[in-house]
Length: 219
Image (tube, rainbow, N blue to C red; front, side):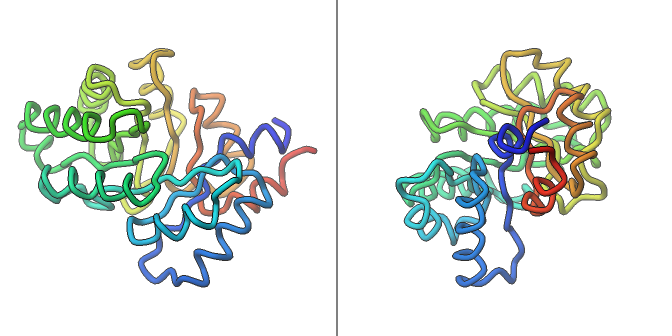
């Protein structure tokens, strides 16, 4: 995959808790220079990122309920609405993993529906955190996300037990077909890993090492 094409599949990510304003400014500058599709940031940096990326091709993607997914639905709804008001172009939100593992599937589905409704026309990516889920649970969340009108299902936060795998991406793509996107994120550090995930069915890549990955890609 050529460098320019790959750049437009990457959500360049900076969600470290110790990221400073200077880090965010430099990060957004790098994103524009490399023509990444989006930057993925924590909610506190959405407004600044939106200002820095105004009139560029790079969007602002925000993490909601991140990274544990353990906040209440109302908290996630409020966080989503505030992020959009501050300039977010896309929403990545973590499901309530504990609720799903406890068998409260209707609760999880209602939460997904609520976030999608709150986002309106803003694309929502539902983060499964695949390392904690069985294949049956992954399939279930993918189906719920599809039915709720989400735009993507996403593998991981990068804070779980493991990151994205081609096997998980294949399962997610098989479940949602071509109806919505699949974002692979978590532990993606090389061009070879990126290409393997794209071949498995991912059409968006979340990574903090996007610049290094592009350097490995053919021109």
